Image 1 (cartoon, one colour):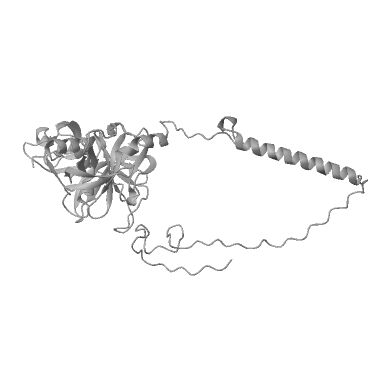
Image 2 (cartoon, one colour):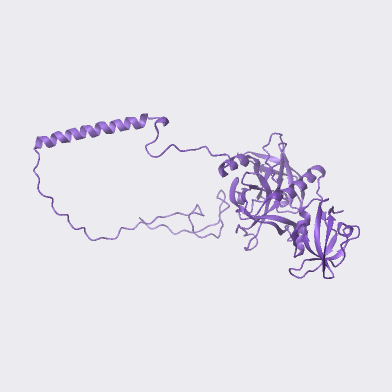
Length: 408
């Protein structure tokens, strides 16, 4: 075989795929422009085999017998071969197969493949104004779609008025942006029609670590992609940033090891039955900016929180934000969260909390730093009554606090 011509990497030209990294190595399985060559080598020489001993001489049959036997053998072989050929070509499926049983193409609706088949028509790829993409999923038969705020913003700072969405069957339509909330990173779109396949929303408060999950969306523009994993943690405090590098949202996220990549944002994280437990939103990464990819740590907004925000956006065009009513100060690591200033007339004030109190537990969750407390507060709806445990002058106390919506 002739030696292959040397491969020279060039930047993608018009019409070529934009997904191959221009700095990638010469790998034929990553770059379709390269040529794969399979080299073959002759087998090593082995010593000649020792000759077998000559068989003992036998009496030779008469020539006529040999000819007769050969003729009969040829006739039998020819007849048998013809019969097998005719049987093989004339046999239908009822006769079975020569090798193995009939393949089974029907899948149990409770299998992963069966669940994916049911939910895929409800998942869309959201095409953003900057040429990128996110994901989303239909939540009502009259066309409401949930996604992320940072998806509808794209590469800018303000949400688009409308966006194109791509369905799993290849159809594309226009979706109106109903509204979005940067503090929770939730947005709502709407497509025309009143017979859309809505996904079932689960109760995310019932999610447990170890539950199997599916992440569905369009990572890196690869629409209708499904990955599987488990819930790795719950109520994980996560900060996300906007395009200016400023902290924009704080969430008590569902953590998962299901593969999530850029483009998955806004897509559903479901339980193994295909019910939505969260909106895929962010990933942890050790890579430089712009090079982030899945390392097995992804985060989703709990669907109970996202649904509450989406309902408010649909009803009023905006969303409320839950507050405790206190400014947070510096805390020693592992000690708790210090309330540096309790706002007069706030939920904290009404519950009897005072400046300098150190919260160590909120609604049954131990808290050791400010982000944890903020994430847990924002997860809950205004009007929720929670129990807080705090320290004052070296003594431990507890109180009932009724959370409220921020006045701004």
